[in-house]
Image (cartoon, rainbow, N blue to C red; front, side, top):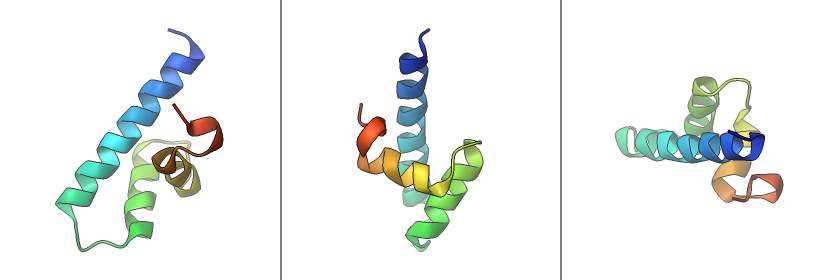
Length: 61
């Protein structure tokens, strides 16, 4: 599996996990959802999670 394929798969999993958390905890603020998602996928940060969700720059699939 190439690096690009691994990153694409990781980004997909990040988006799915974020959506699951969002449904499970609708009362949470966005920052808490981003932080919890980042904690689940080290070594990425909450800013990276945000970029993945928005499909910004290098995180556009």
